[in-house]
Amino acid sequence: MWKNIDLQKCLSHIQSELGAKESRPPEMRPSITISRMCGAGGRTVASRLVDLLQPHAPFGCHWTIFDKKLIEKVLEDHSLSSRLAEYAPESGRSMLLETFNRLRGNRPSTSKIVEQTVETIWKLAQGGHVILVGRAANIITARLKNVFHVRLVGSLERRIERVEEVYEMSRIAAQAYVRAQDAEKKLYVKEYFGREIDDPELYHLIVNTDRISYEDTARLIADTFLNWRKSELGAKTA
Image (spheres, rainbow, N blue to C red):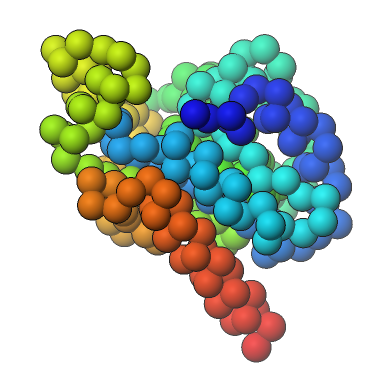
């Protein structure tokens, strides 16, 4: 189902692409974040979106998906933050520090893993041609002009049905899972970043996957994103 979402593709992206993109200006390194309710199809839509966007990528660039589990796995096993450090220009590092300070505000100090995740997401988004699913990526990268932000939503009933089907859970287990995941996502964004995950101002596009199929959602995102990119680049050259 998610054939293009795996650890090896993430590591390959890090090894082969980020360094090469230093010569390209930031506006030429587009990225996308996807925030989603549990069961709204985030991974499925992201997987299809990569296939739709790849034909539009410059030669040698490959769109790659980093979801919550992959980001945490890479951090745990491969010291991603330290490996990415060499690719961050000085201006990017100072901007990242400002973002750290702004996001933390008067809240308690974040755990080390959250700080590493913030840094990793920031650097991946700067490198470009990544789809970052979850982990408050849209808030972390809000100041980056090359990033397009999407939110996927749906009714509780339909999302529970999808989780039952995909993960082969009982009805009761699926209900508990969806409610717990939704609560965890809201708490994570509120506790560490001081924002409400459902705030519509955080996104360029919000899609209800009850009403629009995953395939059509991916196409809608791709078309809207590509038009947004043309508009952004046109404004910069005008």
